[in-house]
Length: 138
Length: 138
DNA sequence: TTAAACTTTGCAATGGCATTGCATTGTAAC
DNA sequence: GTTACAATGCAATGCCATTGCAAAGTTTAA
Ligand SMILES: [Mn+2]
Ligand SMILES: [Mn+2]
Ligand SMILES: [Zn+2]
Ligand SMILES: [Zn+2]
Image 1 (cartoon, each protein chain N blue to C red):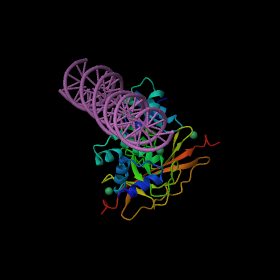
Image 2 (image 1 turned 180 degrees about the vertical axis):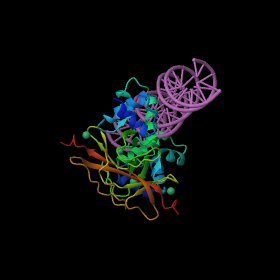
Image 3 (image 1 turned 120 degrees about the vertical axis):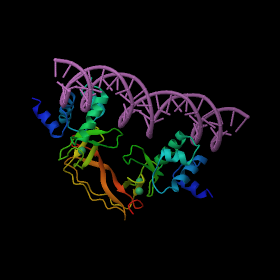
Image 4 (image 1 turned 45 degrees about the horizontal axis):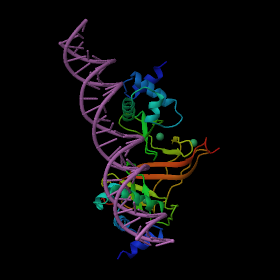
């Protein structure tokens, strides 16, 4: 049933349309963060802009977060922690695998303390480690 | 004199043309990392693509490094440490100021240890802290 | 029930930036 | 001087994010 998916959307105050259920379902089946183009291919022939706006809505409502992994293409992944509409609370390190091209969320990896120069004050940090993932380094 | 600039280029095996001397001089006078567009404005009416290729050459020869600060626009700064043609050795944290928009190299800030999941191996890391810089947090 | 109001979707278009191709100009070697 | 190579300028392309607007769908309230 779609009940599970529907509830997930409703819990984040997102109107559960057919398209949004499809997108959520697709996102949930991915093993790593996906790009808009990935989503487009996976849900063809759905319209790219509609998918884009769906992701935007999901992000605004704390259901997914966008990831800048340095490839120049934004990736998206479902928020694992307790995010709410208007406020995300899932800061974590990301990992980009140079072999398979996969981008992973590492929510268990401790965010390290970065000591800044005097008078520099940071309220946000983006950390992307690059190398070989578990599958590719075997 | 241009002797100083010329020597800097030659030391990195870069042919010291007039354009390259101008670009190097401009880079050296900046207080933070600049974009290609910044360079274009500062050196008008020099051609954008020529400037782009000049930066590329500088980067390949270990004179400047490019910075992905998450704004979507690549920034460039002179390498402070010992970089050589073909191999950079100046990994450091960067800082993006949300008020003035400046991107800073923080070569003195210790790169923190990031503990990855089993079998994940990283040989590169991009860390960008965001907030207010020394000037803007006063 | 039906009209109005609001939301979602689809398609076309725009804009920014990185990157490449190619012809022209400049420079160095022979 | 002629040839070979390097650097520059201009035009063009490609990719991705983002917006405008009209059509289709859904909810609300007369
Ligand atoms: Mn993530
Ligand atoms: Mn730097
Ligand atoms: Zn991998
Ligand atoms: Zn600042």
